[in-house]
Length: 402
Image (cartoon, rainbow, N blue to C red; front, top):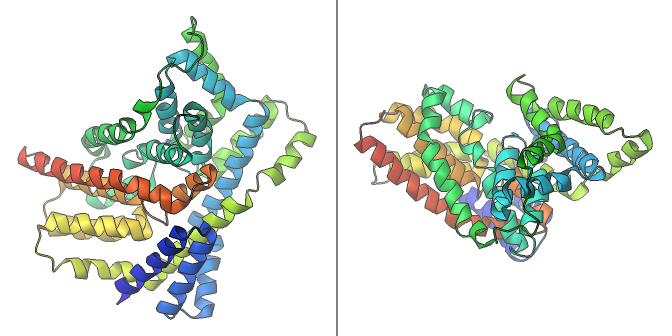
């Protein structure tokens, strides 16, 4: 019954979104349904909500969202994002590349707040050619491509550790899936954009490249601090904000008002409620009932784990299902790189349509589109990618790749 109840919780959320209710109301409805169906005591419900502030992994999401919004306000005040877009025009002179490369590059940042910076450039490159819903999809889809593969993300590191697969082999195996992810976003959407950005062709592309680095040094610095110096996201952003205040010569009278302007109440509230929903789902223990339910299906073992990882990824995000399902999968069947590639690809596809995925909340809020519509637009691409991953896995097995 746990899975039935959980399905009813998500049905309440989807129904409220379909009726045009704001995301915070839909999630609150889901939380209320969760409390009633699972008979969660009020004290336990309040405790799970408090865990968002007591658990650093959750609290850091809210803090990083605030800090990256503050950094965005600083960059806007000095026109750095607009100038970076001009540099991209001069360097590539291709609107499609602008819309794809910026999210891919900024997607190296393991933070939901990076979606805001992606949105600034994608919106500028696609305005007038794509609807807001399509812009939200492009931003979310391309921003998450690095997350499927790179060890800057916890899910990749966790699965590699549990599966015992060397990261270089995994990354090599994911090159083709990454190209497929790019194609699934490019052909239906970015190919509709005119290549010409409407600006003169630059004769000094080397200078444009240098200027691009100058205008995006803040983002590059965050990446270096995270990748090279192993800093967490929050301190990395805080250091760059402090450096930016000095480099751009901000006066205190400019900086202090930004503390208030960076507090996006709607964004932070929606994100907080989604994090609370994740805590509630974990508290119910419904995820642990999935393997037993799926084990009785008359299908190959690897397909059982495909369903397990897709359903689990949609319900609770990637980390929970990776931690629970990876040891089961590698104990139940021959593993190696192909199995890790399959399961990580399925996790990635599921996370792109998960109501508990904070990045989707940020993208929907940025473009002012309902979360349900963004998920509905993303679902066909996620299913297509999942079908590709199944075929790709079988091909690797047929070729004897381990």
